[in-house]
Image (cartoon, rainbow, N blue to C red):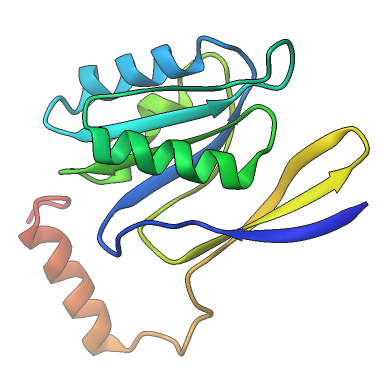
Length: 161
């Protein structure tokens, strides 16, 4: 077996969700999940089919996001993987809905960070081993950072009081 890493290529402020799924209807179900949960989101999703014609299946409502999804799915090239790029929203807005799509098996990451996908390859194909999402911790938060975190979450409406 050989290993390589694939850097996710995207604009700095764009979020994405990378996962594994098992069926051709993944793109349609993820599309429906996003528009029914966060209709304001602009998005594109691509799914790497693992058998039959082994095509990259895609959907979305914004061409830039669709293009990002297809480009990154091609670079990753792992069967049964999907990547969803989103704008005008955050992964937290749709993550539980995506996790509840019946054919979704796992989520590797949901982030806007610089991310590398660790890919294993053998004679049978390619698979995602894991991800490197962002940087290593630089320290432990102090009381000041705790106050900033809690204030920020309340300011943007994710926590009350």
